[in-house]
Length: 176
Image (cartoon, rainbow, N blue to C red; front, side, top):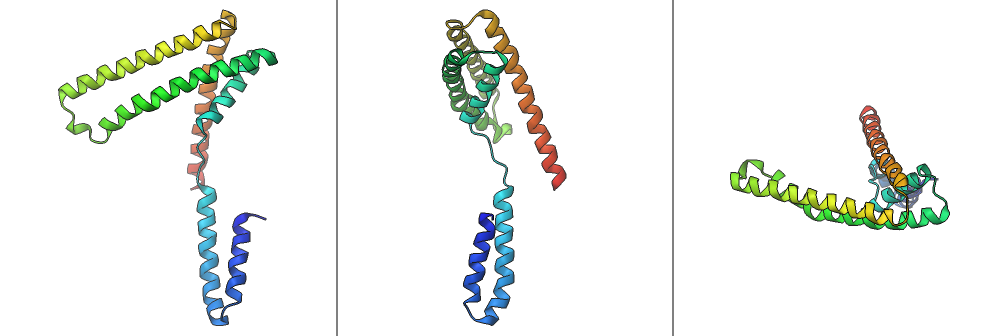
């Protein structure tokens, strides 16, 4: 039995103990209200946390790279640490910069735009350096062939994730 249904039953029992006239009026209204609230609560799409996504991604990669248990543990540790650093950098810098200019793009002066472009390019170079660091760290434990396999499967994972997100959006749009 769902939590919403149990909540609805509790409310109805409380209402039944009240005056019968109020009971008949309020039962319908409260039942409808609880039903609507429960529908919205359960219908909200859940966003995947970054940690869960990295866990799924590293599991996928270790499977595709055919790593044994000890290699898999090393890979997941190094990979997760490096991915977290890159993610945190993106969150702190790039998204903050975008929000600053996306809120009112008409108010940007030419000199502000030039500075913004330079900052974005600097952030992209930093991310590239972080990706190179990730590869260098992984090369301490794995062969170049395994790293190339990882890179190929990272791209496949990304494409599959995007495809699933699009499919889910289409599915949700058809339900409405």
